[in-house]
Amino acid sequence: MQKPIAITLGDPAGIGPEIIAKAFRDTPDVTRGCFVAGDVATVRRAVDVISAGQVPLAVAQIETPAEALGMPPRCIPVLQLGAAITQPAAFGQLSADAGRIAAECVVWAAQAALRGDVAALVTAPLHKEALALAGVPHSAYPGHTEMLQALAAAHQGKSLAEMPVRMMLANDELRVVLVSIHVALRDAIDAVTYDNVLETLRITHESLQAALGHVPRIGVAGLNPHAGEGGLFGREEIDIIAPAIAQARLQGIHVRGPFAPDTVFMRARSTPEKLGEFDVVVAMYHDQGLIPVKYLGVDKGVNVTLGLPLVRTSPDHGTAFDIAGMNQADAASLIEAIRMARQLCQLPKSQ
Image (cartoon, rainbow, N blue to C red; front, side, top):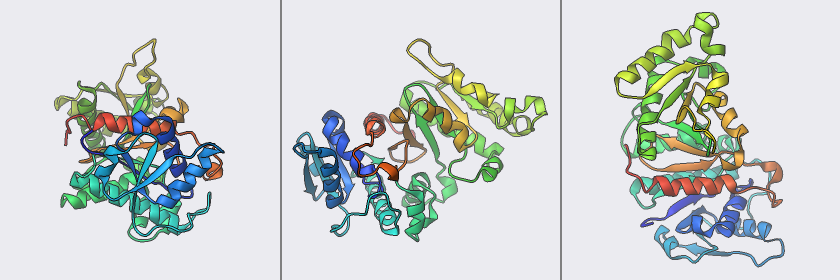
């Protein structure tokens, strides 16, 4: 690695700092060349939580990201952002301060990636309600994806419409890309438009082709039960989704569908015994796509933002306030997110 990877702190009241500490402890080969963009005192508290009477990990405050490249294994480099915190946020408690800290870490890391100071960013979980409590500008974003989209667009002098992004959730068995992300279900249905579906197919094609090294096989889920059953249960498949698929094919995209949502994910699932029929499924809304991926195992899922001029990955779970500070959090998804970030930042960018 010629440049380090930034791992953002996440909400300091949640499990983010704890799983970061476990990742550095348990997988030094994966975390080599990584550093935490956040707060030294909060990371040291997390180390105390996971040590449980053992010799604690070393925590080293660094002044520049490049210093992380020379750190020894099982030493956590932390770049202090802002004033050092004397009293870390109380575990499991929603607060505006915690939301602000988490957001400011993401802003700094994204801008560092956009400047080229870091190779990629891996974002530990933030709490959407804490983000809303943090106030302007952070409260304007429902989550990481929208925040990163806005920061990337501003950096390149573009409008949000000129910086379309999509969420992909992936594990060893299944990849899913979403047409809409963090919106109410009623609004998600309205977001199933010809332009949005076609744009999702284009972003999926370009991003996965770069990541996989071949033209991806894309399956598309319908919106309605049985993919509308020929119009009996809704016409979105006939009037919107199928025409978008037809246009995508004319553009050289290998895509099929729309298929019944209750079977397409099973068809796409790859196992050691059988290769899936598709490399990725495009789902019409958040829960339609994320439930099947998370059912297969939250511990292996990775969230990847497609369409950004930077590499960003994240674990596919939240802040888990209910177990924060109890040394119960599983770092597996974060470790997989770091692995994937390392892989993606070695590949040529499609943007």
